[in-house]
Image (cartoon, rainbow, N blue to C red):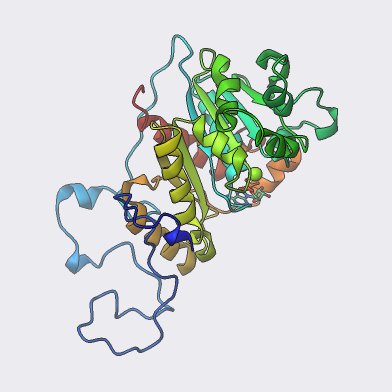
Length: 342
Ligand SMILES: Nc1ncnc2c1ncn2[C@@H]1O[C@H](COP(=O)(O)OP(=O)(O)O)[C@@H](O)[C@H]1O
Ligand SMILES: [Mg+2]
C-alpha cells in the first residue's frame, strides 16, 4: 500500500522504490553474469573492491571507505558560536519503534551541546522515553508539553527543565500527551500547534530536536510542520526498510501542504553490525535508494546505549570515551556540515 499512497504523484525521488527485500536464490542461472551476481548469499558484499578493478587515482587510494561503502570524509571542527538563537528545528522521525529515535535525540543533542550549541530537546512521545532517559520520573512532572499544547495560559519557561547536560534543556512529556492527539483534532490549525508553542524558543536555542512517537499521526505531523529538517534513524535490518516509502510520502505531503521548507536532513543507520552481511546489505540498499542523504556516520550496535538509558544519561556522559559516544560526536559534526547557516 505504501508505495501507492500517493497515486500518480512523482516526487522526483527514487527513494520509495526500494529494491525488493529478497536475496537471490542459490545458483540461479543468469544470462550475463555481473560481478555482483557471481556472489552467493553466504559471501559478504565487499565494499573494498578487488584491487584489479579498483580505480587507481591517488585520492581514492588514500581515502578509506566508511561503513556505508563510500569514502569517509573528515568532518571539520565546527566554528565556535559567539551568540545563540535562530534555532534550526529537526524532527527525529520513523513510525517504527525501537530504531534509535530517542537514543539519537539524546546523544546528538548532548554532542551538539559539547560543541557549544544551545540545544532544546522536545519529548513528543507520550511514552516519555526521552524524559526518562534523562533521569526524569514521569509522575513527578508538574507541567509537560501537554500543558503547553492544550492550555494557552502555560508559557514555555514554566515547562522547560534542565537536562543535566550543560547547554541542553528539555521539554518533558508523559502519558498525558496521548490525550492531546485526540483533543487537537478539534482545534483550529491543529497541525500548527507545536510550531506555535515552540516559536518563543527559537531565539534562545541553536538547535531544537523533536523526538517523535512511533506513528505518523497528528503529533508527528505537528512535529514535521514545526521543523526545518527531518532525520530518519533506520535500524540496519531488512524489515526496517519497510514503511520507509510511507514515511517519505508523509514528509512530502507535509512539505506540500503545510511546511514548504521541510527537508530530509539525512538518513541514519543505527544498530549497525559490520560483521554481518545483513547489516552491510541493508546499508548498501540505503545508499542506493537515498544516495547522499545517508549519513556517512553510522551508529553501531552496543549494549552501552541501554546501560546509559538506565543511568538516565547520554552515552557521551555515561561512557564518554566509548565508540558509541564518539559516533554521536561525529554525527553532530556531520549534521552541522549540512546546515546552511553553519
Ligand atoms: N546503537 C544501538 N545499539 C544497541 N542498542 C541500541 C542502539 N540504539 C538504541 N538502542 C537501544 O534500543 C532500544 C530502542 O531505542 P530507542 O532509541 O528508544 O528507539 P525509538 O525511540 O526509535 O523507539 C533502547 O533500549 C536503546 O537503548
Ligand atoms: Mg522513542
